[in-house]
Image (cartoon, rainbow over all chains, first blue to last red; front, side, top):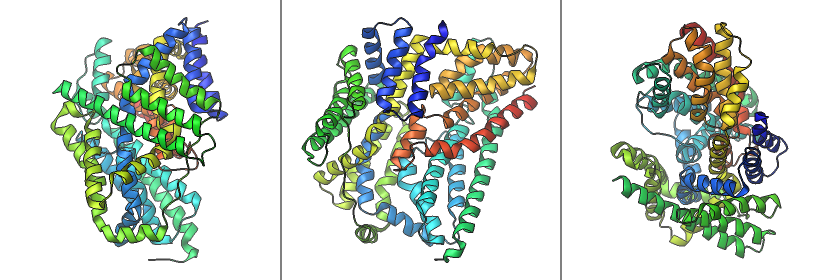
Length: 228
Length: 307
């Protein structure tokens, strides 16, 4: 009957599918898992409270919100658009590809660059959108949504597949430590090197998808008049 | 140094608490919000958790977290509406400030990166320091009043809505799952499907095990330990695979799972609300085809390169 412990996962999945209120779904999933595993409701509440407070760091980006709000109100996006318009021939896809490569290189040099609140919302997405609008004029809602999704996705791709190419990365240390505890000696350098091909493959696939996106935009908007 | 930055971090949490309480106050006074009492209570509750989290007994914090769920379950939460600034005004302001407008935003990136690199102990609180520097710079450059600053804080906090705290709540749920032993159960279940001696099936099980378990937990690190011990060692490494290569690929295979799951809220759900996307799952949807190609690449690479 051990599998009953997975009830929390079922609740989460169903909750997301039926679009129930997420906060309540998560709390209920936790409660159900705790109860079937023999925890008392009080122990569950203690565990939940402790874990939630311990994880406050995850929400520290709230401090950046006033800054982003102020800059947006003063025309941050509009200025990003002006800037991109000056660069001739820059397409949305090219710009996104450049960000992907920079993001992976930053990982290789262990520079903590990037982040959705720090880069994507204030800079990457407005610039990617501006590059397309400089070429084709106003995008429709659907394409704007795709530019947003792609901007966020590049950040994730670059971050995830670039970080382990640095031998001191947390992920590399985890692999070395776990394998060591299971009786296999490997070095951080070995793991970092072994992470490089997949980082490269990610760049190739990411760039390809950006090229396809550019072509799709070009096809769709070419008859609507070029605006330079 | 370590204690200083820990105290600084606690100070930042108090500031976030104040941000949230300001939003609670504004929400309470917002007569256009049909659920102003419940919504104000939500922000106040969250503000208390941030400000006093360290000194509250765990049981009290737990009750406060559960109360967040109760408020939203009974649909007593609604975010306020803000009139957007006119486009012409924004363009005029953009002309006025020119590229100076990027200075505070870039300072956010530059200060946090420089600080984290110079003083490794500061890495957790670096973004907080950078945010304060950025806000001060923004207020100087734009000649903004403190009042305008807190108004923007309120507007942005409300724009995030409940999904702003979702990553934190899911991280807490992960801790509950771990304590309940969910990981062991999954590892046993997947291990049961794999016949011994077949390298390809072993590799597929290791890669997919990482993808699925990471997608469920929203965290590749938690998955790696469990799945490597349960599947990676017996079915891949003991069949002769290079442990460094198999291990390295297993962790990035886990990250493929991260790209597919709403459980990894700070990578997938949060940016959707940060970018004000219509579809909460739009980022995940965009990532699905690329991720499938990456999963196949992981399987091929581990099978042909690790052995």
